[in-house]
Image (tube, rainbow, N blue to C red; front, side, top):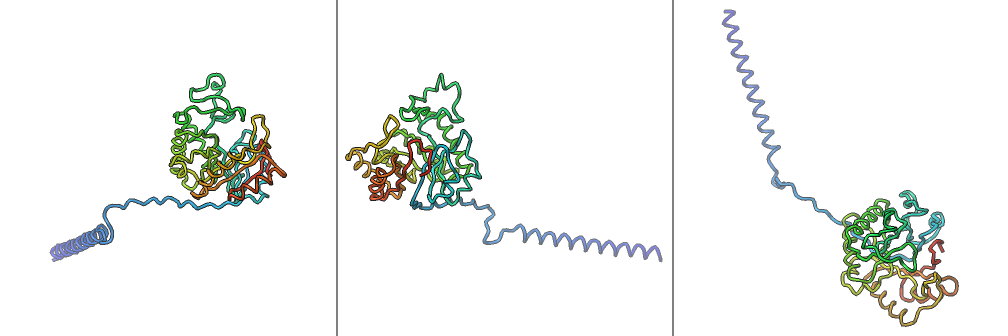
Length: 305
């Protein structure tokens, strides 16, 4: 009887194990069904994420300043200027990120001579002093060590310009002032290439150009920039490094009308005059009459006024 009972108990135990196993399998199947089955409101395919470009705020600056040499950052901090344009290097060293941050809430723009090559920049190769590449032209008669770019779309120069943009973005600047562009169709092609690159990296970076106001005749130009810096609207900058001679009225009137087009397209117009005292007071009055924003600076751009 003991053996029969043992067999019977084995049978019962086996049935229990079978029932438990079946129950576990059933539970797993139910769990899998409800967790793997897509809900009516969810697609089995992952929806692509929509990339929304930041909305670029409309700027309405009231004042600005322009210092490229011997930059006094303490003086800038104490000033009331909305915008300060500085060189990305001071004393042959890059301005550090923390210094730029310390100027907040001022907007800090980086000066970038992308229309001319400068032989004191880090990209300049020593061999270029004797044998420059074919895309580098003559030295600028106004600014020593600055050289014309004969072909702005030369791959090497485009790459150098993009590296400069990368550096400006990495250092936290709010904008860039592009200087040295000739008034040619190729200049707009080049600017389009650079601005497209900027937008792909930091869409909110403001883009201003220096002079080159007649590029506004190209329909693409206005859509590429946020503003313009005009040098010497009322008083001319002379080839001997001096300023103070008033420009001809025809030139002044024509240039004002051109600059008004920028205002009509919601672009900022900054005007720097390289005079001071009564001469600047005369220039300032006329500049402000046209809703442009004036600034007085020495020709060397080494003092904050």
